[in-house]
Length: 156
Image (tube, rainbow, N blue to C red):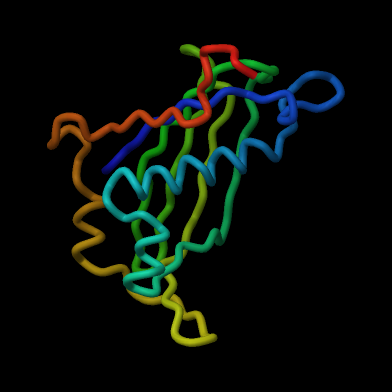
């Protein structure tokens, strides 16, 4: 199945009074990683909506928190397609600080068509299924590193 990897920096606003990452941020990072995953395989959510009236709403999410993260930590989020059903896609995510996994979970997204003011789950097209099921090892460079929030220059 397809996979992707991104890096982010933990910001001060991501932490609680104890200086530990506030748990809802994992879900924010899963959402960022999920959208970047779809972009990396040529299924940018904005283009799906604009060209095909398809949106990818979150239907379910879960996270297990294993180790704390702190301000200024650099994290890597590894995303892989875990399951493709008739109308849903399940992405699993693992969050790492260096080699240590700090949390893991999933998000379940629907394949939903917008028709006027009506939304309806529709079957995932075979062409999309083929893209998502492609083994990451079949194509060199398939794992994409995306670091939009990584600022190593200390300019902030």
